[in-house]
Image (cartoon, rainbow, N blue to C red):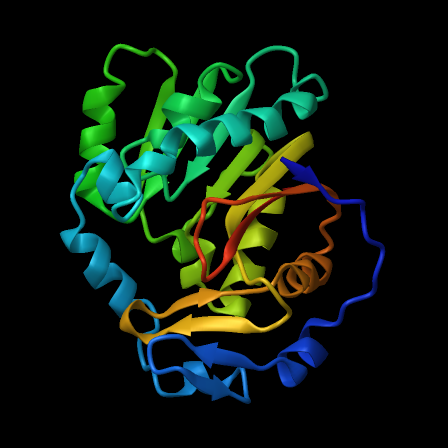
Length: 252
């Protein structure tokens, strides 16, 4: 696991949006204006919803055919999370697993550290599978069926809000809004952890088939600064994908 030194850099989201360029990965063409990818889509989220409506409610389905990376992902996440746990509530620790799917992260990463966990996902099929899997755990408090961009966490409830491999579907404005709502959902010493794909340079990658948007780490940090979130730590992990990497951020 490669740890990055903390960078202190002023990043203006609006300026970055005007300056960055990217690539339509499927067509192999350059995109000179970041905002143009949103202009032709009346319902930005319809493509991703259509994809996940057909995805199998299995680990392989959650990982879009890359089940073999699951164990490596879990170990990396636990190693990253563990140093922060001692600063959270000593009792009644509560976590929120965003875009939880069938509960892969809840089961393999969160359960050892938290007393209570809420799950939220837009697909009812996935939540029903998760409920079946966790029927005897005693730790799952709520299963919320809601698109993440519309979900509002309960105020000051959570020690940790975990968001993994879903923000690639978000518009910047909706991501800012989500993080603001998540901030309000944290306890005093609470933490947001984001783990998602990041580009290898400062450009973005766009996949039109499901409106999948891979941002750079710099782009994410501009969003975090816009919201007023500090990056406490970050770590990269290589899953062998030649198109992009994966970065995990701890935010407060």
